Image (cartoon, rainbow, N blue to C red; front, top):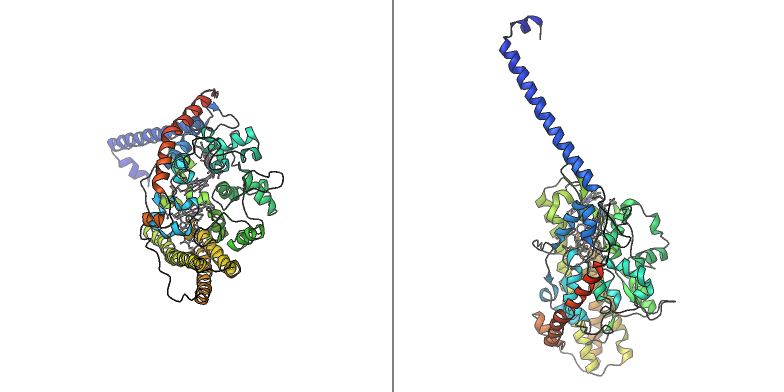
Length: 504
Ligand code: HEC
Ligand code: HEC
Ligand code: HEC
Ligand code: HEC
């Protein structure tokens, strides 16, 4: 640009330029002021509005201070999203795979087993499950330890009662004390909001492995908060100093692999129940999600549970962790595409491929294990001796343990597909091992024909086959929900009404 050019420009061009510049400046100013306002709103909202008591169990009270996290947490109430192997709505696993009814004969899981929903439903779902029965008196039914992974009332009650005492009561006796579903007080220190471990079983298990949880890195904590509940566990009734309590214990002393844990249980001579058909001393895997994840590539590369299940989101100039914990396939762009450049459809295919392949061998293992239980019963009926059955029953125990370790690890076939397939291979190996030995044993008793596979094409037929009185169980549950739950709710309401909420 030179001077002569400038001189030639007519005045109205200059005025227009001036006006346009002013307008741009004005709108820019407006934008900046909106952003600052939003920021100010955000900062204002972040300022604690209420004083949080040390063991405040109510999510809605924490929510007054942290509305973004609370509102996203509330989305765990949604039940609108299904994927082939996951999602946030309930799925009747026994209807999907009636083999499981026979595999769990003699154990409460044969009555009812659904795939989990969101954290908001933990308390309601454990009330409703046929597995918890219909205890009408406080001194019958399941142990109190069953509450441990359901509610932010747990740290409060453990502090009030003492940990061993907490594990020494019944589920029914402490029912009215646990009405808030999984939430803030399970994972956060109310004063600093730092991530914290509130469940002693995790601290104790890591200590036995020589790990000090207080030295965990921030990134490790983003998985360890989940490992308080999403793990394999059992109730130790013989813990020195806590005899008689159902002491929640993670069987990790030998390590995280299913072989390590099986050895742990074998050395203890522990079994969850005796199978009604095969009489094998069985183990029930719980949900070793953390252990299986630890063997996968994401854990190896330092990706935490929270990276996928609680990714950061930006809203109104504010960045926060999405507390809508569910299938990450619901928000792939936040959960996966921060690290992966592949398209949504490619990533979905990657997940489904891994899950479908593991499911394929899993269903094979289920058929084999049902056959092993049924053939073992035939051997007993033909007069087999304990000594003849010993090795066979161990094969059934080990095979079903390996199967369950994979089946019960929700998301495991994505978290660690190779390990899941390897362990399912061991389930099939032990199951078929039992069947080869059974065929030989049955032949010595003169039975050479194939033992018929029962008609267990539906959940109902399978439950009838193992002799479950389902009508009676449903009736007991109905009465429990009508008579007992309203009392628990009322007692809890009265108690919580006495809690102060101190405004800041
Ligand atoms: C206090 C115990 C506890 C903690 C801590 C916990 N969970 Fe859960 N989680 C549960 C229970 C119990 C359920 C099943 C709830 C139901 O079905 O009613 C569940 C369900 C889930 C589901 C299935 C929900 C859906 O919509 O598909 C996912 C995913 C999940 N948890 C992931 C996590 C992650 C990730 C963490 C850590 C950031 C975590 N959980 C921490 C106990 C816990
Ligand atoms: C299952 C465990 C878990 C539960 C339950 C939970 N949080 Fe969090 N929260 C996390 C994790 C993990 C982070 C990320 C922390 C980090 O990386 O520093 C987080 C972060 C936060 C932060 C820090 C800012 C942010 O968004 O990253 C706040 C505030 C917070 N949570 C509030 C809450 C509130 C309120 C509740 C209850 C409604 C709640 N949390 C329930 C695990 C949990
Ligand atoms: C924080 C980063 C991060 C996030 C978030 C993440 N990944 Fe990954 N992912 C990795 C890394 C690192 C690897 C290992 C690949 C490598 O090192 O070359 C990997 C590997 C994979 C693989 C190959 C694993 C195999 O079985 O061999 C798949 C599939 C995958 N990711 C899918 C996903 C999906 C789906 C999500 C979201 C639910 C996701 N990832 C979220 C970092 C991430
Ligand atoms: C790399 C991302 C990634 C990481 C890390 C990760 N998950 Fe997952 N998780 C997934 C995906 C993808 C699924 C499959 C969801 C589906 O099938 O809809 C899943 C499924 C699950 C499920 C079953 C959810 C359902 O809908 O039924 C649970 C529970 C779960 N994960 C818990 C965890 C826990 C606990 C950790 C850490 C120990 C963890 N996940 C680590 C991506 C991840």
